Image 1: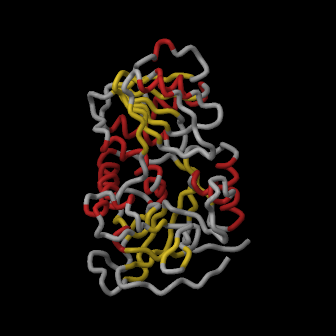
Image 2 (image 1 turned 45 degrees about the vertical axis):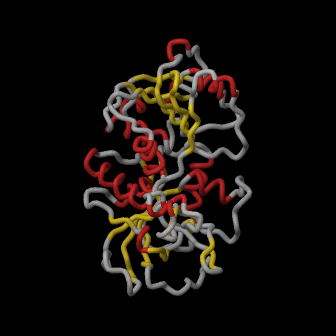
Image 3 (image 1 turned 90 degrees about the horizontal axis):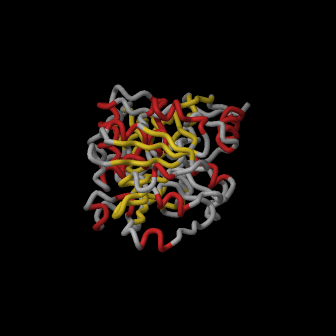
Length: 330
């Protein structure tokens, strides 16, 4: 697919994409599983590249500078949300792809170049490699709860789903020196890797969970589906604890109300982060060594389709990244 980019605005930059993660969101959108995709569609909302054009009002970035882009590419900058460092919640935000801005559809990082508001082009620390592009979505998605829920060395944390999100959540928990980090998975297959990533304990959800009843202060749900037993998950949370939802299944979930009402459990949603949060996350990752575990594919259509298929078939380990400047037909 080829398209004519809209005119570059004064507060925008153009970024040539070097690497772009293939996110679970891309699958939901490509298959229209969430029933909100607009076609034609070019996915990609976690990517790293270099600036090739600058709008005339952009003074804090330079041509050739390496930046990252997350799922939001524009916000108003003047509302209460933007002024309180919650720009990702701005009512006038524009998403990096499948969004609309002045009558134009936004196209993401599977394209060779992307234009966006300069405020959302985040400088990448020198020691973070291009292949770590998934930090711009999976990384900030799993980092933000640690900030907003004040998760620290006195907190016991559980992570449900050891995949593209969960493997980063475990690393953040280790970097934050949480006193106990329990990985909850559907099988023993990822036990050893979960321990490498930062888990102190590992639990199989189909087994007897008696030893994990009321074991965590905060439970981060990084993967869920039709078979998820929400009553079981609530049982591992301590009184006055929190259930934090990070993934969005294609069907509504059903949570037994008594299980959280009688225990004063809070159910919390969390959506990526502001541009300030992304900067903070990247700096923390730079200092602590938190990185996505990735498989790479090339930048041809055949290679990109291969990467999408690997993710759809549950074979991503743990994040798939498109590498190489430009995009080529086979």
